Image 1 (tube, rainbow, N blue to C red):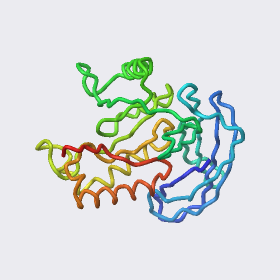
Image 2: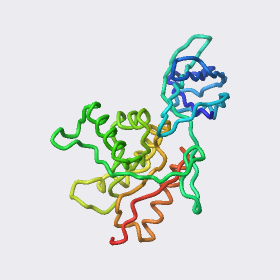
Image 3: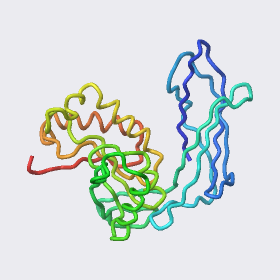
Length: 257
């Protein structure tokens, strides 16, 4: 397992630290651990400790019928004392995409049968209670769906947590619009200054979710068939690949635009 760890050092001196990685299974039992030493530069944010490799024997793989989740614990030690720690749930699975055979999860070919789902819940508004999301995802699975497209922006963290827990595939989408307006006050006002930052935040936030299998960079974008649109797409695509090269990157191609 490759663990990408970054550290903030808000002191005026370089700091010698250790990163301790621990994997816990669904029952809370430690199944893997490793350590890495590093010197973190002074007054820096997101200082990379480089990739830390952690070996796990006989992994229990996440899939749609058995969405098994591990807990990854990262502890930061200085002078032998834990000074910071965080935990994240993670699932282990393989993704394969083939022009001849289609999509395979853990080597098993399947059709991606999904729906576009917006962030709100009708009369309940935009702040949707977790139990409503759980009911919706369970209902979608019961009717035969196995995937959700987050239309058309990153959604609340609880949605991804539930997709991990319930076994639902996800297309995570960054934008509805780039530079040309669909509405007077939509994201086109902010795209030039904030797009790369915002797509980075999406990928860094959601890349540990086993449910996420695609990154989508636009929805029916008016620039998609232009040279300028191709340039923008390639810039963002390369940026996403730098943060995560394990998933395909796509967009909502609309032939009528």
